[in-house]
Image (cartoon, rainbow, N blue to C red; front, side, top):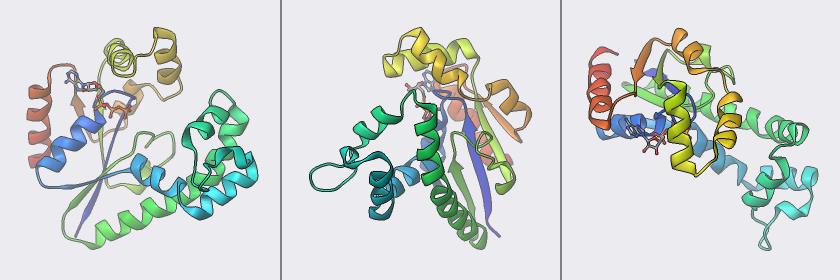
Length: 194
Ligand code: ATP
């Protein structure tokens, strides 16, 4: 019987890096963000978004203008809520279908879900892996990767549940404090244990 394993952690804690290592070991890793991006661009959702936010979120060819949509919702809690209410159920439905398919299969399938705890996927997966780094290091990596100021990085980190709390609720914790080599060793150990 197949098994569904959720990978999560804080922003810039190393989830994508872990996902790539697991993929390289031959497992299927589904990226919830990518699923979401694809669904949001589907014609029926784009149509609904245009009804709510106006045709300014459309490109000339009728496709979604993501930059424009981001600009509208960023920093506007109520608009962000509308966007989430429109999109989250569809994304959830799609991920649940993929989880069912994974369980009906034979092997382990990993789902990288950045907001696994915040969006209540905890009980929908069989095991949870949290990628952890101390907050100071998370801040530095986020500033470096995205070119954010300290304040911009803080806002994003503070909008999530603290990593320490995620670790308490994990079945496995990968400590990404050291370099890529040490992380790869931990992923290898995880794959033999899980
Ligand atoms: P997001 O939540 O934004 O999707 P993420 O959790 O997927 O981020 P990554 O993109 O994997 O995080 O890593 C964040 C940044 O830190 C990247 O620039 C990555 O190259 C770097 N990084 C990841 N692991 C390490 C490490 N062990 N040593 C040094 N840098 C690292």
